[in-house]
Length: 157
Image 1: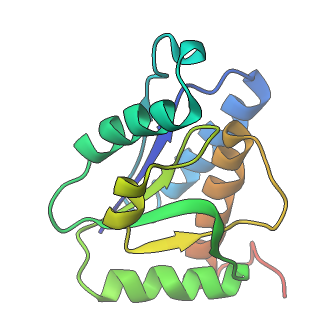
Image 2 (image 1 turned 30 degrees about the vertical axis):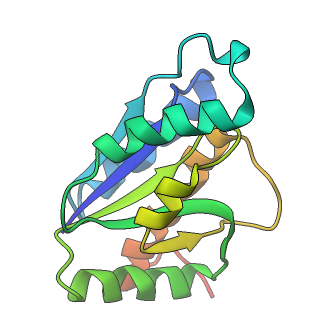
């Protein structure tokens, strides 16, 4: 099973880039993992929120393949503990999904077309984080999930 993290825009802050690289490197020991950045929409300041969501969603949907299990990281999604997340990853893997695609949208979220394509929605917290910070938080939680599944001592109950 492969995991793809699709994100809108690049990560600007060096401290976030360093942290993301750390956990992406660690993830390679457990699963094929790729993080793909979709470039920011040009002239987005001249677009309405809805126009920006539509443009970003069009680019995101182009990255999806038939059979992908698509999970949106969304504030309205299901919240779960790290252990529950690891169990969910295991379940999706056992279901035969060849690729799980996690998607972090832009600042205004997703257009309805992306929600319609999604198999699940996941919220990392009831708090709001910048979409750049979410990248680091998510790859750490994904790494944590794999260490839980392997019984490794990274996660403490």
